[in-house]
Length: 199
Image (cartoon, rainbow, N blue to C red; front, side, top):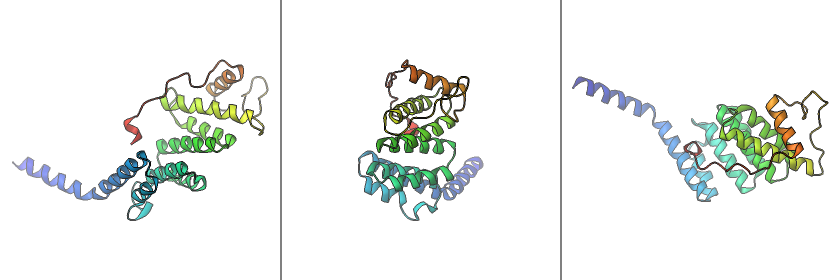
């Protein structure tokens, strides 16, 4: 009997201490639901809720707002929110912010900036993960689009150095060599399905 009373008191104390977190989670979940339905304006309202981004979970809210703004074509606002999410967030949010910003930049034709964003995301992701493979594919697509555009492509390195100036690691060099020689075809791997980490 005493044990159940102690557990009940502990649960009540934890519930009261975590009320802010529960409301923040509910706000983000409602915003995500509205975003998935394409109701972007109401998603913004849900993400901001009472108190805006001054509350807990601000990095997640910045990231989610950036995604909404990018979807609406408000790239300046999206870029600002992605940067805020990177300042406040953990490594996963930072990597996701770089990745999604890369997608937004690619969609509007900023291939050089997109390439840099994908490269930053790739540097933060665990090599071999599905997310890293997707970032790698998108890095190559951005590089190819950059190469084909009127902008100058990334400079080639001297023999024995990296193909791209500032390239870090042998895996990036191999990846770009495969792209240059045509041994890699984009879209060959199936896209990953929905994940519990998406929400």
